[in-house]
Length: 263
Image 1 (cartoon, one colour):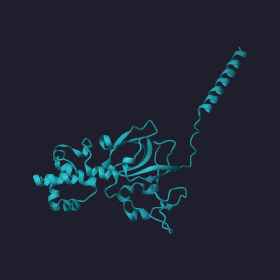
Image 2: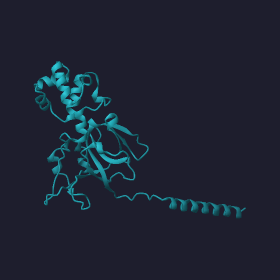
Image 3: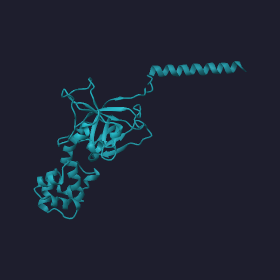
């Protein structure tokens, strides 16, 4: 259990074995042994590791932190809030104003490995939208599939970078970049305080909601707007709907009268 927890905590903190070993003042090979289960920390190192991650020794030894069923350790809470370093690679134009990078469909699959790589971001197409706040970071992503009507397959969704995931507002749409599923556009429900997860829901009811643990999340972008070549179906207000029903009733009555006349 402890080997699983040590590996999970280190990855959740975004640090390498070398960095954690230096912080704990132990050898990297020693930490590697702890993580792969070939060695176990002594009492002194157990206390040091628990203090380092802001959890109890009992949690470290007995709880499977990777399942998300245990209380969030301080290091993970810092990760969620963005207090720990979270890299966002970006580009600027000739006037030193941040661009809106566009992730082409062909580059979509590679985004999960290149999102923090300046060389990857640098070759993405860029543009400017004058109505967006110059003090915030935006990026545009392609939408694939029919899970989020009225946003259709082939649309482009622009999101505002969200550093602190505690600010995710339940029931609102977000672009979530995950390790396993890549770029997904969903209505999100914030369950971080409950079980350190996000519930991702589609507006198309044929798609089942599913949860993703925050340790699997790479980036969160708050929905700003979308661009589509398709015109959404009009939504009738109550007045419009009433008029439509009345017209249907008139048409039905007229057909009934015509049928009676022919008898």
